[in-house]
Image (cartoon, rainbow, N blue to C red; front, side):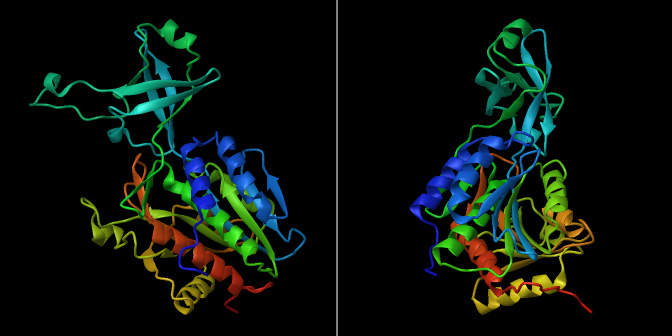
Length: 360
């Protein structure tokens, strides 16, 4: 393959996919975009009750391999509307209250998107002796209304979901920046894997289940459900992980990972060692740069859900280094994106149908 594998069409899809809102529990519009892009490269689709989408190659094969990312993004819910028309919120996933003040928001209603802002007292009015910091119980959204009834006339009610409108852009030619790179980059990268398989006319000796799961951000729920339905033999999960070279991150605690230095291969109890060895051997053989990370008891990703489903599934995690996770300026390096795609692609070509990865 050429050193650059992303096409103009790929990047157009990525931009449209990222700019579309897909908060946890409301992923369906993003899933439709993803399915439309993947459709030419797979034989059929399955979807489940909550919106996980799976494109399948060789659906009749008994041996099943999953490649997986998750589709949902963090968001907020309207939790309370005050008499003077201000909205108070609760998290939907791991939304960061400290970045909220002064952010513009989209409030999703049956009448369409209503704009609002996270307000915050001006610096001139805050006590220098005892300055309050943003907290989940003191941040609020102003939609320009004076009374609760005005808010309700806009179609806003308790339970409306709230997202940020920040859109995709590129910094310094090779840094992709947007909200929700965690983890729609995963959905994008597995889509590119099947595009390459189709483009290069590669035939796999097993069924490939290209899985874009929902509800990862609130506890791996989509992966848990779809793993029980597919019952795969193998799962390769891709998610994001922290670049630890930016300020205020302790490498002794978080390890050393850097954007631009390659995919991150995980070491954790849920990661099956022989499958990981196949991936590492593939990276070394194909000269794909990679990094390593130790993740202790759990990976905190959909890897855990697949690994411990059914009677146990050989699972591995290939992560994309990312800066500023769960903010609106998440950042990844184009080279890492391409190398994650290459590593999954080449690892699939190295696998054999019926491979057990057994130690015995």
